[in-house]
Every structure is written in structure tokens, then in C-alpha cells.
Image 1 (cartoon, rainbow, N blue to C red):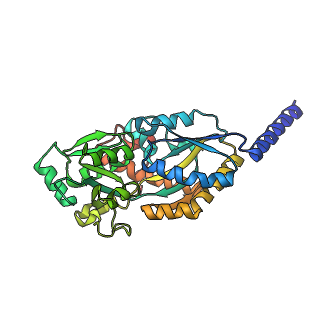
Image 2: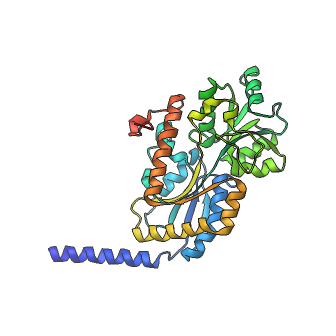
Image 3: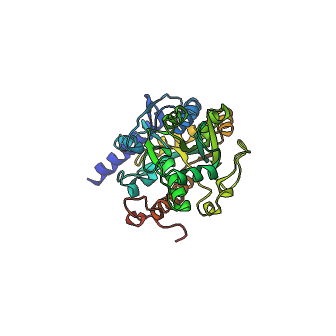
Length: 333
């Protein structure tokens, strides 16, 4: 019996090795968590063609929106762990548990590559009656419940930045207007449907350069080389130093259990994609910071990001459950 079992296991191992060597044998599905035109969509559609060249296969990308990205995450989590379904996402899944949006996060996945991270920026409609962060806060306090903030749902970048403002300023009486991604939200901003939008600099910068929206503050501790005339928010309120620097990130993931050989091929392909001169140029021009990390380095980054952001939202009173419930340690503990 032992010989039969050992022989069977050996056959399975050989089959898995052969499958990894021949991968990919068919089209790969790339499921993008957010809508077309947003920052995640932009990054994934820019890097993937270069990864395909190394991979020797085709990745067909599909935008799957809804539930702050949870629909896409659950779809990929339930797919076969064979490398033929990729999750192309941003940072928000690391907050699903505390926000009551689901029981899964990136711990259910293997990070193929954390591609890049962004710098948050607060932008306003070009006709808004204020021109910087201080003017916005003065207007909000004089007109409670009237200023409309674009939002992408609990756990998205806008919700974290709004929670940060709320925590620092001691209350933010504004109207949240929901959208399926920052691309549609910024379109709404330019059309006058919302007044202010917390966004990633990379997706807002072209609209700023074109004069279709105006920047109020960079959410960082220093100015950004792409918009050197826009002050960091710490110049308006030093209390932001408690939370900054902070920013969103973009990554490609596969379900846990995906064969090591397949993971290695995908990681190699996306590492080459991140290093491609065209992608580097695009990311630098739009204000993104390249990362290109995988394996333990990616997991360490995800853990630290989850800890700091989850406790920020908890302390601001914006969570459904305490991070402690899910074993998410407070930073420094």
C-alpha cells in the first residue's frame, strides 16, 4: 500500500511540475476590482502587456466593480488555484474585516507583485469657493452638511483620508456621494456632482494639469516633485504627522494553493513589467512610486499597512469591528 501511495504522490508531483512548466496553456483572466479609468485600472492595463511578453501568454482583463471591490475579490478567491484567474486590486481588501464588508482579505492570496504605491491628494471642482485646504475647512465649518465629498465606499482611499481629516479636525460635517471607483468619482467632480474628492495623485494629475480640477493639498509630509506648488497638508495642520506618510498600493494576486512554479512564472513576468521603461516612465510621470515586490517582502508590507490603517479607522470610530477581533495588532505592539 505504501508503494502505491508513494507512487501516486510522485505522479501528482510530476503532473504539477509539468503543468507549471507548460503554463500558460490558455488565456488568463485578470479581474480588476475597480471601474475603467480609475487608478487601479490604469496601472494594471499599463503593466500587464509588458508582463505578457515575458509570460508568453495573454491576460484578458475585466473590470468587476461593486461592494468596494469585494465582489471581484470573492470571485477570484472562489476560482481554481491554477494561475488562470488573477486578482488585480488596490489596498481596500485589507480593511474588509473591520469594515464589515467580508471575511476575506489578501491573506487569502499569494502576492504576485505589489507594483506601485500612490500619494493621496485632495482636489476640488474648479469652481469651488475655496482654493486650498484651509479655505475648504473654513467653508465646511461655515456651511455644515453642504459640501459634497466623492467616496468609493468604506475602506477605499477616500474613506481613509476622510477619516483622517475627521480625526485631525475633530469632526467633518460633509455629504458623502458614492461612486464605483475614483475614475467615475473624478468625472463627477469635474461635472459638478461633487465638490471635493480625496484621490491618488497618479489618477488626478492629468485633470489638474488640464485645469479641470484644482488641488487643495498633498496628503504627505512634504511637497511632491510633480506638483511642487501644492503644499503638503502638514503645512495646514501639523497633527497629520501622526498618520503620514500613507498611501494606496496596487497589486496582482492569486489564490492560496496556486502551484509554486506558476507563482514564480507570474512573479517573474510582472517584475519585468514593472521594470519596463514605458511603465517606469508612466508611473513616474503620474506621481506613483514603483515597488515591484513579492514574496515575504510583499507580505511584510501588507501586514504593516493593514495594522496602521485599521487602527486609524478604529480610532476615528469608522469601523464595524475592532482590529483586535481579527488579530490585527496596533502598530508598535
